[in-house]
Image (cartoon, rainbow, N blue to C red; front, side, top):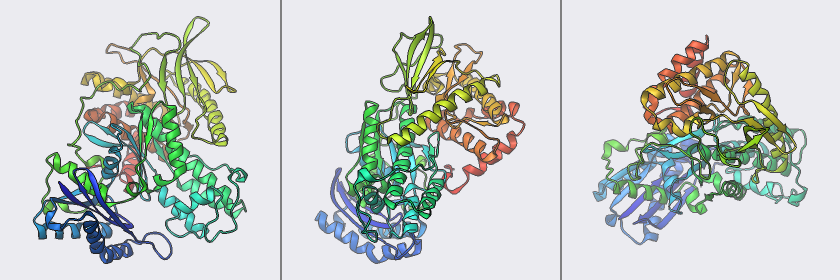
Length: 573
């Protein structure tokens, strides 16, 4: 099957031809603004000017005529409206002129599928581009967004910083060079050995599987204004934001139980990010995959490939289905071309999931999270767990030390405060800050995330109700958990009397600010809707429990709705 793919979501107009999974051509033309960021109308004008010639070049390189095509596919979204319309119009003209089928595809899903050709079967995708920063995984028939940026995409942040210092769009590659100590225009006097580049503390903003970049951008600009060397600021900026990305990707891998990581998007071309991702996955006993640069950046070949496999699964569109969608969410696409497994127990590779009431043998690995290795142990005849924050090889030492110490101390403090509210948490047996280890009481039960899909609907309703009570109690007392997901609740009872424990409040903070409470709730619903999508009709039980323990529940729900309807978080209709 011969497929032409057309990409036009943002600054790049691309066209590629794929035949039976093989890339025959992949041609791109990128709009570069004279100053500032992308101007949608100017980018669209570029696509109008270059589009037909790019398509012609792709056809020439593939050595086929339009009449020999079996399908034309194009990026339907997400993206910039004026740019998307150009690609859609050219695709429709080719389809009508040659009387061949047309498919509008999701740009983000195309990044995933072209990456899966590298041999990964069920990866978490770390999607890092100009307008998008998302953590995506395939769960129950769709690609689900487990986490994303709370403000701007990482590429946009880097471009904004580049404009601050006089680097033209796109700024990411030049920031990468400066971070290595290389000289770039207009900073030809900034060459320096990397060993001499200092590292400066910058804000590190992670909320569960979500990240935020606006604060770090402001802080980095402030460092320059104070006279800090540009290479040091660039290296510190890269190391911090890429550490954040690797952390949330690892948390998603632990949550859904996979040891594969796939990189996608233009920012993922950064060699330092690829190195960090590879180290993180390898330390988990897994592997990180990164397509070649020509397939990482926006390109037509990935659009053609996705069109081919969608068509092969029986998906057909007519012209009425080809209307662009600027907010075309990844999780709106029915992934009919992948086999859908039955929802079942979720187990992190190389760990043991406890049954209620069981005591594991000493040394059993019970968890491999984004921060720590959890193993069973014994102290004074008592069954315990050791939570060791082993050094993360992908993070530089200055960041690692700051996070390890701060989070360990915060976890100890918040476990006590949360337990004082009547919420079950593990008792602290011992603390070794030097080794980064907590010894905690063993709570004899599995993560709710691992078993929720296997339980009866009645049982699920009771568990969600109790989670709502616990969340409401926390928020009413002015505490946000920071990683409020089903992975951080343990089920301690096998009968109908639900007994839950809350664990790992290392990202928790004291705050009655409704914005932070709303983000805490949004994190729960975002991850719950991804991992347990078939149980979404049970979430009313959460609000029933939440309203019983938090007098401000209506205000919290309104804030959640407001956050959810912001541009970046529009849910599928």
